[in-house]
Image 1 (cartoon, rainbow, N blue to C red):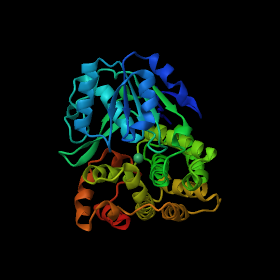
Image 2: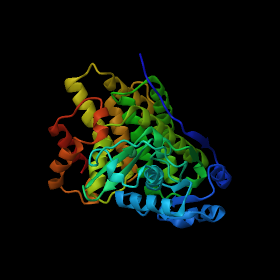
Image 3: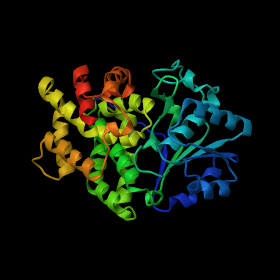
Length: 379
Ligand SMILES: [Zn+2]
């Protein structure tokens, strides 16, 4: 056996830790840029405590926005970047911090649709502070950007992009509305399930995934129904962090393989797409494994997932799928058609998804027919 598990991010976790941020930021630089989501009032205290430059991310980050942010950093002479927000603000800040030192044009470095040049210069010091519990982006080494020109989402990726510090304060998530709690929480669950069954899984990732799934099973319903309760919010913040560590080390799978082209072409949040796809992705993989590759460890792993989620020792892979389906129903996850995705769009999405980097880690390759069947069921 041989495996690697890397993270160079210092993780600071705990209720109330956000109050230590201004001091922490000053240990890295004196001219910070704070990147926030659209609800800027949430990060206003931080901006004023740091007398910082600000950048605002409304919606998911685009190539254009990152180019503009990097120029802003260069013009203002910023020496440290802080993201305070959801996955969009974190990916944007992470991308701005690396593009600012590597020459300014994101498309030179973007996977799949860009020139694929590798990022050589270290990023500016970058601190990630998530205000949702889902993406785990605070501990990953990639940033997903939309290229409106190409109609897809693709990643900037480099070990040099790992945040210096991930500061995770569960109190920041207490006020999240139920719909965002649901979508981001199911993204976190997806990011624990996909690495666990991935072709690149390893024992250290397994430990992280099992502990994360156990926490989601007990916490997500409670966080959705009573957002101000402390313990479920803490569990979801941990689950999100664990998902980020897992995906950065073992990759993802078919759900994220579809989330990339869907998110590039339709105005739907990443978490909502993953949530709508998750039970169908599990079903497609389990059916394909039973039909073509029952010897792969992934099939047994789907049963282990089912036991963790349902709390029953004799649960089958199908019971796990059913548990996730029922959870999506209870959390009122809208189907793909709610985001304007029509039946006529599906074949094109299947074609685009074949190029997505996440597809490579799926436990086995799915046929175009299986992929189309999965999307049709999720719509
Ligand atoms: Zn995700």
